[in-house]
Length: 375
Image 1 (tube, rainbow, N blue to C red):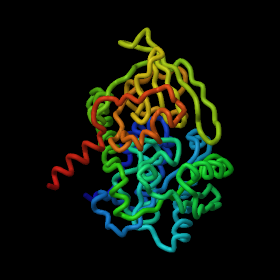
Image 2: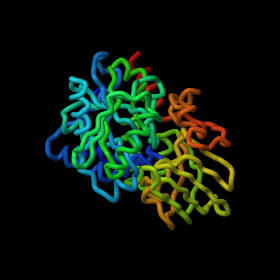
Image 3: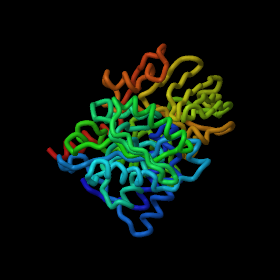
Image 4: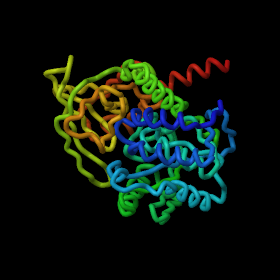
């Protein structure tokens, strides 16, 4: 229930988190390099199962906030979330005992590991999304009642902003997004803070393990000259939605988000069809020939059609040949209270009715397996 992160885990995690990020969460490449460097310097990161966390622990979620395009245009300093964590601890008058990712998508799956290495803290094997979402209120921490504040932000110069109290996570999203834009479109964050007992109630468990298993399956398939896409689907419980070539990308930076649409021309069995994907940092809605075939909170993931390397929204471009995977959302995102926050209508798609993809989310499967093993 406790394991130590290795360089091999980091390599696999970058792939798995890149896929689970549904196009967002920040490009995992820089995060992978930074985490790997810290491990080579002799720093250690321990991953802890949620049930191993004491009730009175102080668990803090850390990561990065901003538009993914900024993440590749301006290299992060790396310790922005650590600076935010120290500011939050100073306000609380207490040191954190554990860290937890806010999302398992992209770079935000790796940033907490870097903070953990620098601060010598364990990381919870879980997160608040089971994927990536663009806005702060869209995690299970906020959905299931953890107060969003106090909260802290830090920029590349270690300028700090602490929000002692805001009404709710949606208000924090508005205020923190405005500050992040003024910080250059990217900031490190530390929020929310919760007890170990609260963490177990609201976390989506075993998502770091899932991301590592997903990346390992893809890497193994490549080595064995097997189908890495089939390997990815076997781990995630997903299905192949479409194969095609990117023929158009409309992307813009607006209000701190990368927003846009991409169009894919079908290849192979999908020749003659067109897929359109709308995104706001993350892929939100997929329409095949005008008909919705997948929608948030289910995961719509682009990968290279030969290698299953994740393709994030800030690097997708004309001519790429990709496979589009559909992965069922975690059970905690399919409840009525969650769908009110992360369903299609929450993103403005009031005419889209959420129809769950078949299957079981890989993290839910791992939790069931490990729960049965301990009985």
